Image (cartoon, rainbow, N blue to C red; front, side, top):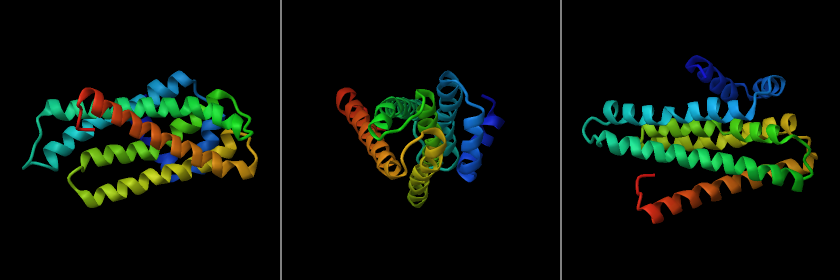
Length: 194
């Protein structure tokens, strides 16, 4: 995916979620495109942000570039596996909440609604030493929940009273998987910088 197109898509999803979901629904991309062209391209901005943040915004306490890149690629792995796992499990959850949609639409919902959270992770990687900025990034991550809630009626046909419990279940599942994967990496491989 071209950088300009990636930035425009992220910007649209964050600033105009209603119109973005209509566009996503009309121009349905393949799952291969969503995961490898969109999600992976977005995640690959993490190492760039980490290096820039370390060398531009943290000149006094620079980390070795190998440590920065290793940490960034571990974050990419954790986020990619978390989003993929949540998407797969959300297909089952949608049936539980009487949702009717194709698997592809459910995957689109999870991946595209994760955009604000991933952008927040990229910004947090760049400004990791500015603790007040990390709070702003966390709020941006919470905004992903709103984006998912806006996209849900367009991507999944679901009774209105089941939508909020579905979104809450997906968010809880994402948190549990993210923490679980980080816990496994920390304890099994003694990786501490994630």
